[in-house]
Amino acid sequence: MLRKHFPLMLVLIYSFLLTLAPLSAQEEGEIIIVSKRVGKEIDKEERDQFKLFKGINGFQSAVYTKLPDGRYFLEITYLDENTGEEKINRVLQSELSVKNRGDYIDRFEEIQAPIEAEDSTNKTRDNIDHFEESQALQDTVDQPPATAYYFELLGKGFLYSLNVDFRLKRSTAIGFGLAVYGADLSILNSTYYYLIGKKNKKFETGCGIDFAIGNEGSDVLFYGVLGYRYQKKNKSIFRISCYILPQFFSDAELPSIWFGLSFGKSL
Image 1 (cartoon, rainbow, N blue to C red):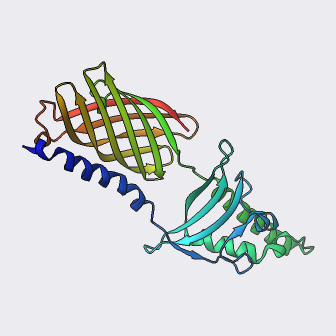
Image 2: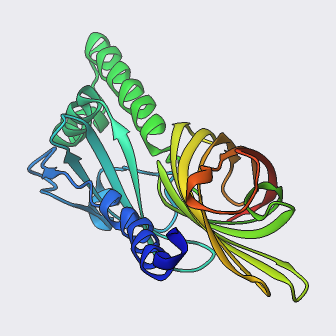
């Protein structure tokens, strides 16, 4: 019965998945000024002047933002060494680390200048060590992988599929895949992922659509996904996934739960 409305459902659901990504990426905050000496944005000259962000190659600028929920972020704009493209990374900050950064900039000359008095020298050296340690931790930017290409056994293609996965931000990704079985059947898929976890190891959940196109007609399958993802920039991606297939959206006789194993290259 739902096949009569297949074209309309296809357009609506597919458009909905694609619009989720821009909406999730609009989590912007208010720019805050950590020090009047740098203003709203720390540019390359100020980075060199105050010896900031030493570990960021291709650095262009940095701003601190505060979200409505009270979280602080450091947003660093840099040039990708491989592609030359301008990219932005967001690093979660504590309120104390933001305050320490401002204090460091405000007192930069005092911290850097040699002080003859022993007590003052020890105090200044402690301050330098504190700020350098804080800076080293903040300069280690956990850059989210941007794109991944991987082969999935079983999973969305039911036997195999070739997939490309775009990381939209640290917690979201969207993927597209294709499986071709001769001239009889082709399966296209689109999946939206929400990722939970730190750095390279993530628990993933999401939803997607399979478009099955064959000689005997077409069908559409909606599914949810739960799984584990290991993804490291410029190295590898590995996924173990469980797909949940609601039967009431399709006349096809398929299992309600389906598993997949993925491995490939992450850029």
